[in-house]
Length: 350
Image 1 (spheres, rainbow, N blue to C red):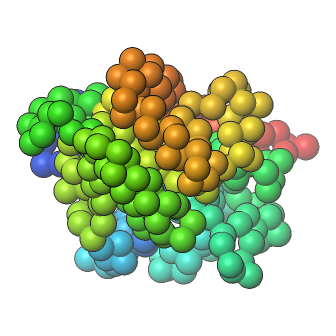
Image 2 (cartoon, rainbow, N blue to C red):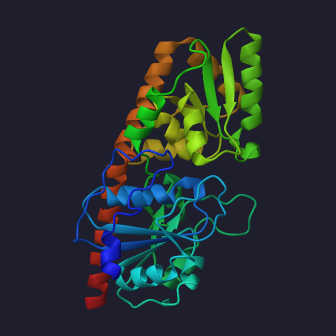
Image 3 (spheres, rainbow, N blue to C red):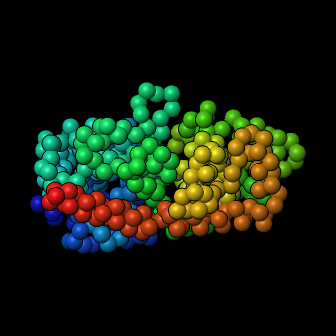
């Protein structure tokens, strides 16, 4: 039963926008079967990882979610409560158990602890701020024997075993969404921002920068995206020209979405900037602004200089295509899993 469930069409490719993805599912009976488990889907990223894994050759992903803790996105392939028996069957047949954020979801499956044949993955999404919890819990992960995967480049600071798996973005679909949006005021430059944590993202600085530019007579408009569904948020962002992401942690999910839509993306964080420059990426992909003063200067130039705005948009858009597009992330994931499975086999035979 479980093996058939890994092949089923229902929910293999998930999207909130109401039209099918332009990335078709790849059907295969080869490769590892991955069961992904989550409750809150941080940044609406877990369902995109699941879809990215299923659009390339390498293996198969099934995605289970419990509850509706994220008010903006509740996409799932299987529901942990309503589809409990299906989930138990999937668990029995899976080769890889992929836990998003922590291991609490394992306790909701009666089959756990799992047989030794399961490869266990812990996927880090978030960031620690004013909390006693570690950003990466190496001791706990070692105790579980888990493979560590981080959604952000900076997660690698905290563990030598950490794999960076970039947040997946369906670039073609977000680009198409932006092209099909009817602009209300074509002569007004619209700046998108999601003030999910305004104290650290720089939301107040952005508000004041916009006021300053408007006082100079520039035709700019701030589009704050908050309290709406993921689908509405994407549509709102698609109507903009620039996205300001955050002073902290550089470009994140919001900025990646804007970049895929062909926008220039402003973000900060000198440590993240340096990590991009010194990593396999080799450059900072976004338009850098460290603080309010730099943000105001950069925004003004982006608004007034269309050639500069186009070049900045082109750079970050190309970065997203090369590192975050669904097939790119899917292939990277299966390569990580294959390498870890081989390493585990060697360790067992030693």
